[in-house]
Length: 166
Length: 177
Image 1: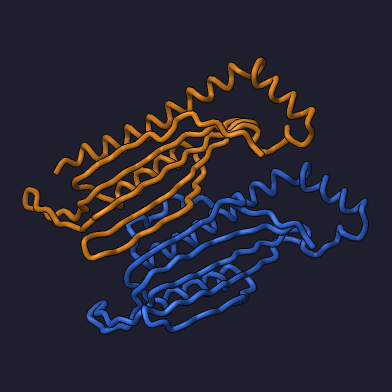
Image 2 (image 1 turned 180 degrees about the horizontal axis):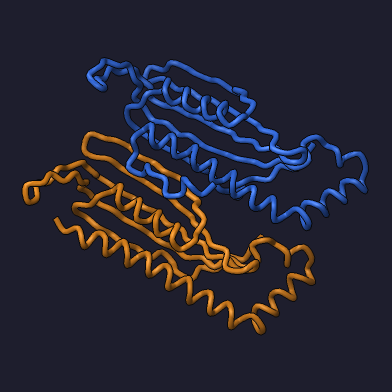
């Protein structure tokens, strides 16, 4: 089994107000594709109630950095009391959604995802020693890269929600 | 028996959950059509339905396989589970239509089966040879192939989202494979 290290633990973004839900999903998917991550959508849930809609989306896109290290982003989006609204701005009718959103991003660095260094106890021990003393510089570089990407995604979504001040 | 590799990790499931009004007939027709269009041998493994006082419950388990090469076979399993089902009449496109209201959960699973013809199971030596072949020589091709099947599964998932007009519809990866 691969070694998964939590590098960014639960970076949360909460928002309440007007937003374009479809555009938000497209933006995140577009970012995932642009940064060369593999699409890995796990769950999509939409419950329609009288007082609004509840949504839950779970994605886990991953990117293989080398044949030993992989970035895995766990993105969870929860929306509650979401209603479709139509706003009138400068004579134009804009269709949006109003409600609450919560997005949580967790970044993992997965090492030895192919399990090559786990077949024998000696390999496992060698890997632990190499990771600790020899490969540490590279691992730290990967961790920094992952933090940067998570912050980029977080900033982008924050910017998207803030830009659309209606 | 061949070796079955899960496209997703063993603890991961590709799920779709929805609560509201949907066209059940159209959905099931679309799913079957997807299997046939892609050359899968379709089979309905399980069908359970019961009418309860608080709403109907139904469970379907569909499966399909496709022999892509002499060595690789693709399996796509689909699990439908419906709760609190009741018939409702809605007006869609100025026409009265009978649809269903309730909760649903659809789970998608994909597998790649290696050596489905069991050609390498005649002896221990052949089994070892097969193990060496797919774990070292053929591994990259299987990984790339698994990637392709995963995107096919996501495309299938997307079809359901389009049908249910979910806000998460719109595949940015539709031209990947």
